[in-house]
Each structure stands twice: as structure tokens, then as C-alpha cells.
Image 1 (cartoon, one colour):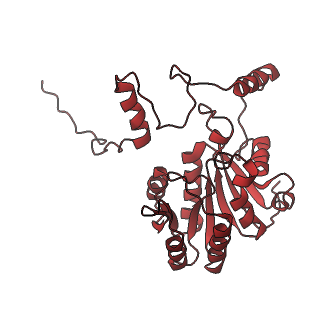
Image 2 (tube, rainbow, N blue to C red):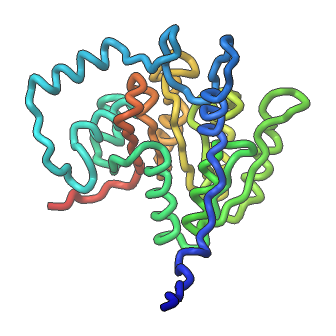
Length: 279
């Protein structure tokens, strides 16, 4: 008796393109050269190229085990103490936006997860709003906005002729964007160029965004790694907060807090107008 085979309803699904950064790691593993170095993924390694856990991380893990924390579900917005510490790291303890309860913080799953939450928020509550991203930028920005059906375009950023910031082009593109656009800004240590605006240029960027009624959207992945100072690297964010501007902000704690890569954590923050607390 012959058995008919029905076509799979999943056969139309195609493979996603390979991740370019993780692809470097795979190529590294396959390479037999004894002098090879993997500069793709930002993580500490031993001389034997094995993952290195910092002593401070080991100490923190031991303290948690000794304390006997349970594994109960966290509140939907995440761990309150973590959210509070994240806001204080970015704005500074005692900053008016914290005292006046103008900051709403949500704990997410690393950079990609929190960016996806932010994209969903834009798609749901700001339908049709465009996000402007720098050229170039972190590859996941485009992928996530595409997946969330959020329209985006690029603003000029890197100038290959000067190997520096195309500041005039950046300002012009922000000026010409539709009013009320989200302007995605790398708070410090721009990925992938490493080129940041000067303090004076940040003031001009804030001026133009305010004039055009845009919404700043900060992605802060390397706080402390650009200048060596947590406060100096948060200066751009604090400038916008001091002006009373509302904005979205992603803080990649995974790198700032000593590369706890297996416990990926991230926060999405919004600097808002004062609002009553629920409950």
C-alpha cells in the first residue's frame, strides 16, 4: 500500500542570514593557524583563549550563593534594585529625573531583547514614526526595526575621507527628517566606528532635535569604555535630561558590569514627564 506524503506547511520557511559577528567566531574555530586572534566578539580571554571570569564576578556569584536567593519569578518590569541601580549609573544618584520619578525602567534580555521591546513600543504607540540610525551602525538595529515593521532611514555619520564624524551631514539629515522622528544616538563609543561627537557638538545635536520636535533614542552599550569614566561617558544622556527632553534609552549592562555574558542583562529606560506610580 502506497503512502502519500503531504507537503510540509513549514517548507516555505527560509533560513535567516548568518550573524556576521558570530560567523567570525565560527571561522576562528575552524582556522588551524596557531597565531590566530579573534577580535570579533568583545569578551575577555585567557592566554589559552578560554573564557575568563573576573575575580569580582566570582566573588559576586559566591555571595549570591551564600545568601541563598530563591528562583522566584521577577516582577514584569524586572528586579527593582537592578532597575534603580541602572538609572543611577546613567543619570547619577540623586539626579532630579530620579528624585522626581521621571524615569521608567524595564529590565530586558540583553541589547537585542530590549531593542525589540523599544521597537514594539514605537510601532504600537507611534504608528508611522520613522527611526533615524547612523551610517554605519550596529547591525541588529536594522534587523530589529525591519522585524517590528518600524520604518527607518540613515543619517550621515562616518566620513571616510577624514576618518572622522560627518557632523554637518548628520545635522542636515536630522533637520530634514519628518518632525517627530526617533533619532537613534550612540551615547558613547559609537559602534562600529568609535567616533563620538564632542561636548559642543552634542549641544548642537540636542538643539536640532528640540527644534524639530524629534524624540532622542539613546543606545548606551559601552558606558565607561570610551573615556574610562562612567560619568563622562553618560554626559550626552545627562545633557538631554537636564534640558527636560523626553527620550528612550537602552543601557547594555552586560559590558559595563564586567562582561557577565552568560547572564545577559539590559535595561530600557524612558525619561518622561512626572507621572503617578501605579499600585
